[in-house]
Amino acid sequence: MSPEMLVDLLWKSLLQTLQMVAASGLLGSLIGLPIGIFLATSGKGELFPAPALNRAVGLIVNAARSTPFIILVVAIIPFTRLLTGTSIGTTAAIVPLTIATIPFFARLVEAAIREIDKGLIEAARAMGATPMQIVFKVLLAEARPAILLAFTMTIVSLIGYSAMVGAVGGGGLGDLGIRYGYQRFMPDVMLAVVVVLIVLVQLVQSAGDALARSFDKRNRKG
Amino acid sequence: MTLPTASKDEAQSAPMVLFAGATKRFGEGDNAFVALDGVDMAVGRGAITGIIGRSGAGKSTLIRLVNGLEKATSGKVVVDGTEVGGLDETGLRTLRREVGMIFQHFNLLSSRTAFDNIALPLEIAGLDRAAIRAKVGPLLDLVGLGDKAERYPSELSGGQKQRVGIARALATSPKLLLSDEATSALDPETTQSILALLKQINAELGLTVLLITHEMEVVKTIASHVAVIDRGRIVEQGPTFGIFTAPQHETTRILLSSALGTTLPEWLRSGIKPEPAAGDRVLVRLTFFGATAFEPLTARLVTEIGGNVNILAGAIEEIAGEPFGTLVVAYPATPDVVARADRFYAETGLATEVLGYVA
Image (cartoon, rainbow over all chains, first blue to last red):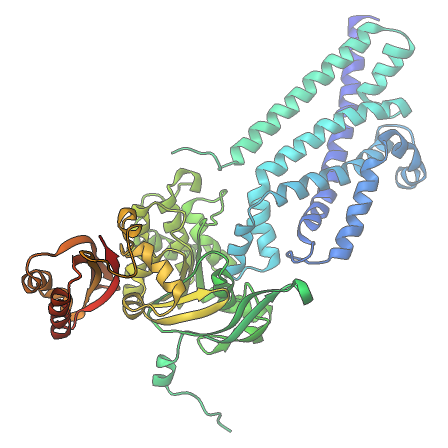
């Protein structure tokens, strides 16, 4: 394969990967965020006490998280077809990626919120804040650095998962690696794919770290 | 039809906070823990009232009944004429905007500057940005942090953080300030400056202050009234000076002994005997307060007894603004010396307590 062809293939696959990761990352986090907030605030004696529902949601989240991703992809094919009209290709891959993201991100958000000192919630209650005001003005504000890190971790995981959907015709860098690098035995393509993935992950992680740091005021020295 | 209403004078003299048989149980059945057991207490308007007790005595629960962070299992808590137990969530939120609270660990938002922390209760109350600006600036000045508006809590010292906490508690112009061990995480010097600030706010704004603490020093310095809590019950309450100079309950005495310099040095305590042997000296604690605090009684005592007086321990304190002194002296336990001393005590009205006898 000529270098021009390789670059062209890599570029196309990279765009597909970015498209899958961005779409499922944003969509999954958007849905996962309120679920994470709910998990962190609906226990007994908490802001929105609903212990039974909390346990039920927790159970579903655990079940979704313990299902191996490749099995999830296959298992929800009918649902994917229903939504996108097909089970093959980049758009179709967004469906299982999003569904895998939701419980993953929700648990990370829950952990980030549970880290917040209970004294802050008490102080806000003592000011006459409503539970909703506590969520938006206290919990989300204080957990913002941790939630940004959680989002970064989610995107990094998604880059890995998106390479996996390549195995079932999802397109993207993983698909390229498998079809050319593995099935046609072209180690240079495989190597290029791995290098691009490593660079991508590094970039995402550094950007996420920097963003989280800029919002973190806990260790400022005067 | 007109309902009978209290006259303005009556409303003024009615207590700011009234506990009537307030009881709080956590858990149920055999596992129930009684945190508060029938507390009856009144918190006077415009005063600084201290509730003191050891950890686990129930003081945190008691102060949280006032703004409804905890609900009494039985009994009543009345704040400025409103029974807290009868309020729904909306009513509670209205009440909480009229009751400020400060905390041991400050509980400031790390993501907000000093200015924005103080603005938080105003945002919660729905004020617009201009109104918030107009309120927060003067509050920062009041607590002496005019130049720290844009600092984050991590850039402030403990004392400065508590000052932000106080300004935040005052933001909604409350009529009552609750202080939950506000100085317990601070060093002695910072504690004094925060207490001075509370005293200033109490005097300037006429704000009623209810504070809980385990430090006698805090009560001694700023509280005009004190209640001693032990195992969920108020065992003693009244004006601070009276409680401190004549404690009736054992818990009060124990709490006081560390704060008033009335503990005897170890070498002296270990040598005390309940009955005198030949040649022993009697150990007497003299307490000076009120009129006796201002007279040169020690010099006269030495003259009366004839020079054989040893001063072994002593301290002069100020309690709720009044001087209070203790002196531990020893003199020969012979009948004539003891008789002369007792005559002197009777004449002058000096309060005394025989602690025992030493060789």
